Amino acid sequence: MQEYQQYINGEFVDSVSGEFFESQNPFNQEVLAKIPASTSEDVNLAVAAAKEAFEETDWSDVRQSQTRAQLLRSIGAQIREKIDELAEVESLDSGKTITETQLVDVHYAADTFEYFADLATQISGEVLPVPAEALDFTLREPLGVCGAIGAWNFPILFTAWKTAPALAAGNTLVYKPAQLTSRSALEVAKIFDQVGLPKGVVNIVTGSGRGVGQVLAEHHQVAKISFTGSTEVGRTVLKAAASNLKKSTLELGGKSPNIVFNDADLDRAVSAALTGIFFNGGQCCIAGSRLLLQEGIYDKFVEQLVERTKKIKLGDPLDWDSRMGPMITRKQQQQILEYIEWGKQNGMKLLTGGSIPKNPELSQGNFIEPTIFEASNNDLKLCQEEIFGPVLSVLKFKTESEALQIANDTPFGLASAVWTQDIKRALRMAKKIKAGQVWVNQYLMISPFAPHGGYKQSGYGKDLSRHCLEEYTQIKNVYVDLSEEEFLTLYE
Ligand code: NAD
Image (tube, rainbow, N blue to C red; front, side, top):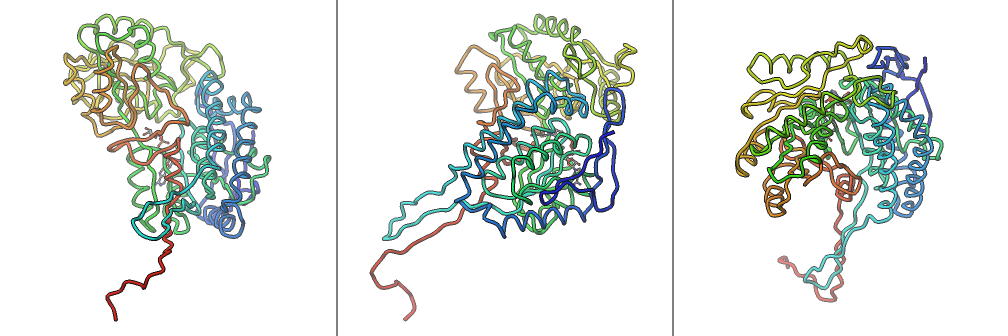
């Protein structure tokens, strides 16, 4: 069994306590690796190393921007070199199918490092046209030591999303991956080391939310916390961040509406509805977990959707034919089953799925059948709460205004989609939907070029894109008086 070490101050080290926790394969419950169980002592060491790298070296100096760009580009290139290896680690650890990890996640992680490499040399302030004889300009400066905490559902992507912009902007970082899926972050740490990232610039500590994440979020030497996870834990992180008023980015849960009008391209919309809810077994923050269908296409759409859902092959995540793997843990599987049971008990019409698959070959895995319910109204628990599993609620609507009302009627506002051939309607909806992302005739498209982040209780601040660099920098104003006149004062 592989035994990992955490990455602190440019070295791979055991946790101070010497304790480990185990990483388990959700497909067969096999123990895959031992991961260091860090505590506050490890966090303190990591933060001290990051502080020293920020304050005592020239890492954050603007003259190093090309070096930072070069290093980020090399990290992207090394990830590409190791796609097969990294994809396998990720699939074993998380239960994501190899098609997802190899064709999507690991590539996107490399894309992210390369994208922020390009931006590293372009961070600048601006000259302000003040109506005075003066030169007024802003400097966009790094924050210092940043902390970041990731969720388990896209582990290698979150390592990239949190690390790349922080470094591009000249910060140093302490990153805590999710306890359930820490391996790919520690594999990427090997790449950080290999490309020669200066010591202390990135530190990776592994362990529990309370024992490590909370300590990082509370730490007074940490200037910013970037969190991806549930809305519930996001609230706790925000309270912890208040300790020294650190800047916070919260990427939280969702209950995203996928809205299909009568005039939509049906085949594409059905394909996207399947992808929207069943990609990564529905364990996606941006899952299209509420499908809103206009009444004219309702029956035809549902028929095709159910037919194609029944064909989804559940199986070993390492099998290239598998289209859905197991849920991350038994606990997660149980929670999803409880939602399904609630749906059955409360009069929701089950269209397909609804239980653990009967196939004995899957009995060791945390599988759930892809499940679709018809929902009579949007107030139902299954339409309001994030299930984080392969469970879709389908709602019928008549008019555009009704669709909009249903779409916005949740505490969340992460993503959404509108399917129509009518460009005016698409744009009207795009303006009125209260969510950080609106796709038109598309679902699940995420790119480093575009900002990702929520409205309402889906959080605030952005991952990815130029906008994300604003989260990792602060603005200083410099006013240079050029006047030759006497200083204007009220005082003699
Ligand atoms: P979670 O909130 O349970 O855990 C997220 C991270 O927070 C983990 O690393 C965990 O160890 C840590 N943590 C737990 N308690 C903590 C505490 N008290 N202080 C600090 N850190 C703590 O979420 P999860 O189960 O890992 O992920 C699923 C959730 O993440 C879903 O709600 C999903 O929607 C959300 N998510 C959001 C996005 C987004 O970009 N908006 C992306 C992926 C996942």
